[in-house]
Image (cartoon, rainbow, N blue to C red):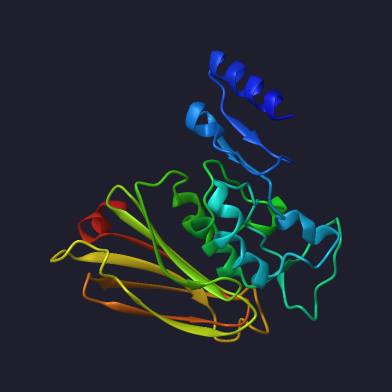
Length: 246
């Protein structure tokens, strides 16, 4: 099987094709020789919630410290049918997702993958304004910083693409408050932050998020409040580009 993957990658290069090895074992460095191999699955991803309750927020704050060390992983984030653990039922049709909507948004930043997707039914995304965040998140990064974390408990990661930064914060089964210094931003420059947070009652209504916009500098510290199974996703971009996007 290992040699088969190599043959596929080599043949794909000849035809200018990109590869996502889904349903595969974890990566072993093949992309160093064949950079057209964007990602591997090799992880217990969101689809497991169709037949089990094993993909929990605690699981999601464990795999960045374990599986992700081997390389990019095609976890297939973006489940929008967010429910509490008491409401959850594994099912193949219109599957449910454990944890909050903001938790799912943050996964697009925390989990590295050169190719990603939104995993849910199209109807679940219709009219959802938070899709604007997902549509902007890059899949290749210029810089990554792990800001804080503990395996199985929580994680906060900042990633840069060009002059924009994205921050993803996740917590497991415990509600949590983090203080995130923005000292990774260039000093003396003004930025704009779009912050997607758990709503105050997201522990009971996991689909609910709150969007906030504010000016930030590298001297600021953001207070990140997450409910049980929650998260926060942040896009930070130069303030000079605010006018250009309106």
